[in-house]
Image 1 (cartoon, rainbow, N blue to C red):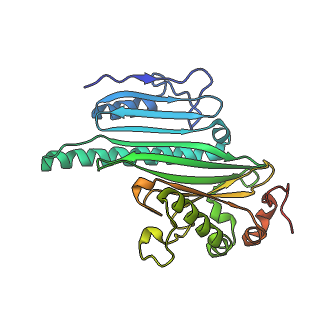
Image 2: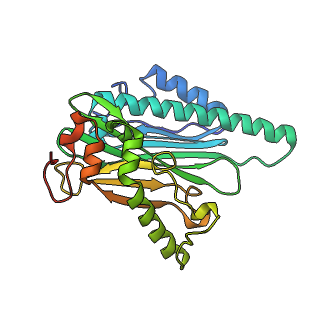
Length: 280
């Protein structure tokens, strides 16, 4: 078995439960390291500073990494949400890799180590809010890897993290406010990558517009820093085009229709581009 090498946190660093990350002094961390060692651990790390966290684990069967910035980790409730997701993702990856390894041995095909890497970043930080966006790169033994997106909006007053769409009265109301502009801008980007306009009468599914709420990830952004004034729409590969075209990102400015679609209690956090507050 490969020897475990664990890089401990420096002084003042803590994990999601507030305890020191040193595997020698933390029984839970030591137990996790021992359990992971059954897969032939090459390296493991759980470190960070000022609320940030970086976890990585590499074995003969899988590689896992997960990180979030200090602005997220310094909010206790948000840190708990992200740490819970971390554990769920790590557990699922380990289980899937082990099952895939067993299948490869039973069916006599080459096993390829699995990979899951998630990085959360700050998308916007208007007063009282923190908008986060994540990209996850994964590989589960197929022809190529995949990458997907996620997002979360944290409200300091409510101490609650939600999906951006949850700030709106209904998903349908938001869709009505952004769909036409989204479809037009998506087709502009498709035409640029493909070198020709998208045919309006095409029956190719990669020429059709997609549902930006169901088939993509919404990210709230702020150009001014005072309020959310832009909606980023991250479209993963295969959703709007073949894998070779990669992901698309369409940005939609906040409009009066977007503000009208919000739940009344959240309208003050949004503004038209160039303004410092939402209009009535």
